[in-house]
Length: 352
Ligand code: CUA
Image (tube, rainbow, N blue to C red; front, side, top):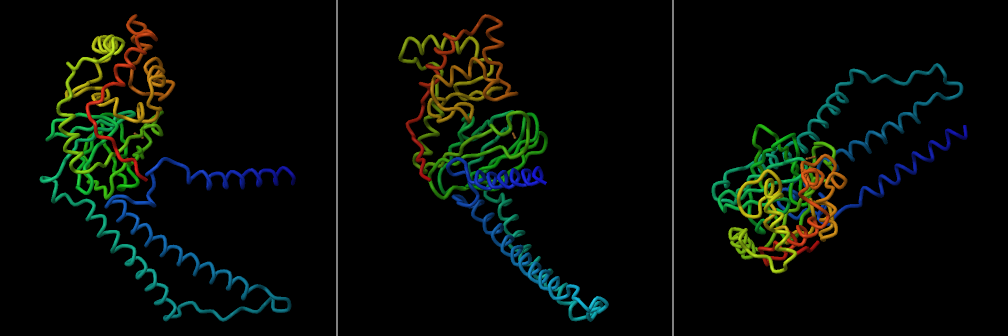
């Protein structure tokens, strides 16, 4: 008996923790404070469905409890059978019509919003970005602007931005809760969605489809800036140039090592690359989407990326060390070099 009580206690405590911790998270990573069109419309549908379901639940439970209490077996009335109502036409009509009405209340806004969010009529006149999901990071190609970036996606506030999404390996799902719903990112068929931010800010995104060891670390950001800042950012990024000389000697040495080894997978200009594009690495606020943005973390990442993000595709130092190419000292130089890759002056407004 005691053991049983203990289990119940553990289970209750666990449930309570789940409930409490479910509210923990990063800024601008919630469906309940929408900052974009898709998220707002989705929240309306969620609210309508929840209210309808709650009303149904409460009414059914009240009737259930009333019936159980009213028709319970009473002393001396063991053989009494209450009045039977099966086949009652009025009742049958009532409990058929009510669910139909409730389903209509849920279906109409859901279908309207679904078609609205799938609308692509403005795609030719809008900014269109090719998004590629990879284990475990995101590549962004601004096709018309001829810009390649990764992890941080800059967009202008108030404008519809279309995303054409494909995966280069397994199925991922693109999800920025504060801006819009999820969209699967498949290896074969391209999915398209649009996002539109109402306010400037940094919005966190998550991969929402289990895709391997580091699925939960496949974070990214959407950075919404004013239209003027966006135009400036595009110009800055179009002009990133790998011939720019770093200021310090250490960074120059880092650049030389980078251009011998790392450049095989990474790019620091607008050429396509197998690994993440690092042209604006210094402007970012996280390393690999999840680590703190400082040189110490970056050195640790270069030396042993697998311990920070298991199963990721970065060969990193273990491979290069075997070839005698990268030492701890080299990693420090590379880190200093990467941190000063700041092509843009635009600082995101990280308002709530
Ligand atoms: Cu990509 Cu989960």
